Amino acid sequence: MFVCNPNNPTGTSVGRRRSTRFVASLPAELVLVVDEAYREFARRPDFPTRSPGSRAGPGTIVMRTFSKIYGLAGLRVGYGVCDRGAGRLPEPRAPPVQREPRSPQAAAVAALDDDAHARAHRGA
Image 1 (cartoon, rainbow, N blue to C red):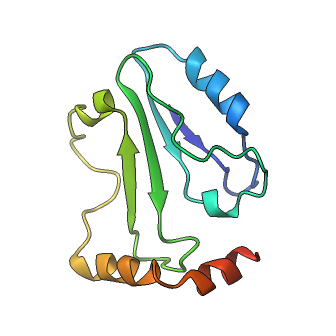
Image 2: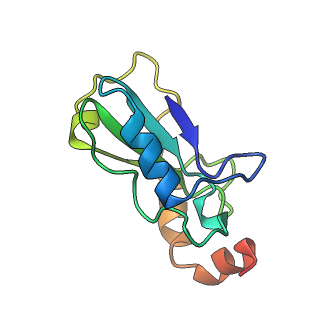
């Protein structure tokens, strides 16, 4: 199951308590993928500050990106964090995103030093 929090294009987000209840209600055999590409733009004070948490079964995968807040559109640089069980899933036959060369990785590393740009982009 794929869930976006916050959602694009609506900007709707789910808070910590509701997210925790939702994750706890899922069947153990289901893999949950949470897309947090726009997490830096979430304005709610109760936005989850860490992954939805470990659970029985295959687990949870949280995907994040540098593309949105750091202005790296088109470079498709991101990362994932997963529960132990989810990390042992077989790799899909066709990955959803092509593996990237090192230049986008270098741009992402450089972007991490540009806090002023991220704050201005977020509007904070």
